[in-house]
Structure formats: structure tokens, C-alpha cells
Image 1 (cartoon, rainbow, N blue to C red):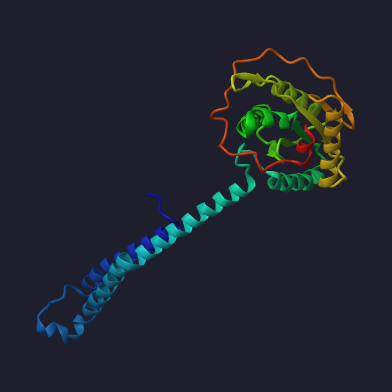
Image 2 (image 1 turned 180 degrees about the vertical axis):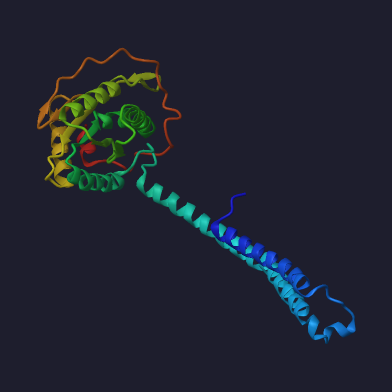
Length: 295
């Protein structure tokens, strides 16, 4: 049983009162000698210290009983209630910043994290990069296999991102089929390599829907912060590069408006049927504007 600081405090207080009561009982006997007792002892001036010590002891014992019987239960209930409210508050905060379908962070968390990274990295002059990726032809997946099939693809891509990024990178689902990653301490060549690795891994995803292996690809827009632009400008630049990758044929990485050539997909691995990847949810309402354009 874990005790709160308030509970530990009241138990320490009650223990101190108990020790004081015991000490008070014996200290007068030690100083004045044993109390002779009898009716005359109550009027004997020599027995006054003993009488006072007995009275103090009774008061202290009453305080100990009061603390244990009433004060401690009240403090314990209050501490447990505060703990419950704190846990619920953390749970609500996590829910407000997490995408329920994929378990990744959401757009609100991503925007806050990007601003914080810019403030920190602007002062230490270290590279900061980001990438935005969009699943190609995702609307066709939803139209052909339903939203359950689309949800399965989103979870598979999310898991792939988790497997091919670093622990300190920030991953977020920022739209229906759109994801973004903040990559601290990453320069342009490293960013290109990371994006290409993730692109190839997504292209190799063995997603099976209705007993059919569905090829999944994604287009990437990447950008490295120049140290002066704001968050909106950096996101816009990465998004423009994503549009260039889409226009260049999809399943490729683009930076500064130039799209890289598509690598040949690897041989299919053992199929994944989409179970156990993340918390169940739905992509019915979380659609980005470009999803309606038939990506």
C-alpha cells in the first residue's frame, strides 16, 4: 500500500504524540520519584508534577485517538481523491493529444512540439528537419475495401513509422491519411536517407484486405529548417514538396520541389492482417482536404 505525503505526515504526527504521551507519563516519576498515590496525594504539593504529567498524558492520548479515528481517514480519503483526479486529468490530456486510431500524436501535439523544438534549436544552432507523408490512392482503398480496410492500412503505416524512426523523433497523424515527423539533429542528407528508408518500408508492407495483398505506397515532402522561418512556413515548404512528389508520380521523396526516383519494391513479406497494431478507431471523420482529390 502506497501512502501519500499527507498520510505519512499525519502518521508521523500521531506517532510523535504517542511518544510524547509515554515520555510524559514517566518523566515526572523520574524527576520527582514515584507517586505515593492515595487520597492525600492529590493535595500534596510534592505530587503536583506527577498529576500534571498524568493530565498531559491523557490529553496526548486523546489527541492520538482523535488523529487515528477521524483525522487520518479524512486525509486518506482526500489524498486518494486527489490522486484519482490527477490520473483522470493525465488521461484526458493524453487523449486530447493522441490520435485514437493509430496511437500516434495528433496535430495539436505536433504543432506544439514543432514550436518548442524551434525555440530550443534556434538557440543552440543545431539542424531540425521534418517530413510529411501521404498515403497514395488512399481514397481508392476506402472505396474498395471500406473504412475498416482503410483503418487497417493507417495502423500498418503508423507501426512502420514507429519501427523506422528514432525514439526522440515526434510522430503524428495530422490528417486523414497524412502523417508528419519532426526529426531533431537531422541535416538534409540524413533526412533524405531516412525518408527513403521509410518510403521503401511502406512500399514493402504486406497488407492483406479481403484475401488480397494490397500494394501500399506513400509520397514524401521533406524540409530542413533554415533557422529563420516560422513553423507555418516550414510546414508549407514540406507540404509543397509533398505536392511535387505527388505530381512527379507518387511513391517518392521530394525536397525543394525535386522528386527522387522510385525505388523498386522488395519482395512481399509474410502478410499482415492488421490485428493488434493499435487501438481500434475509425478514419471516417478524420480526412484531410487533399483526400477528396483522389490521392
